[in-house]
Length: 157
Image 1 (cartoon, rainbow, N blue to C red):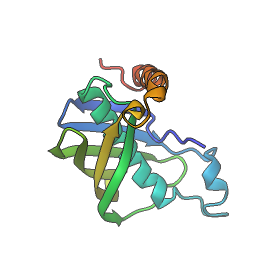
Image 2: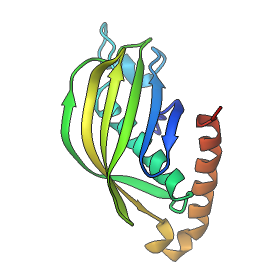
Image 3: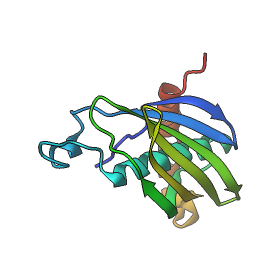
């Protein structure tokens, strides 16, 4: 199952930072079990929102050169507030260290101006064909889908 935890990109400075939003709706599947009677966004989903935001920054900065971006490490993760249905998680990701294959970011998610989650994450980028040449077509398809989705998420004024 794939969760899209970025609804919109609101600011983008290639190679430097990205700001995104996730609008939490009671219709999110995972809220049915987390928790009955007190629906809150699971911490792992908050972190995934940080990861997806950082991945968008990497994709755009590198002109979608890689099909796959994976979480390599999380550090200093802090959960400070709940994200409840009807609220908006505002994510800011700033580059700490940019490398050829991996990048480290300082991330924060806020709700109503108050910190909900913060972390330092390291993401690694690659193409599937680097490990298996027969997956070159899959790389092309994934990149095309990401370019299309990016067009929906980022609409600068």
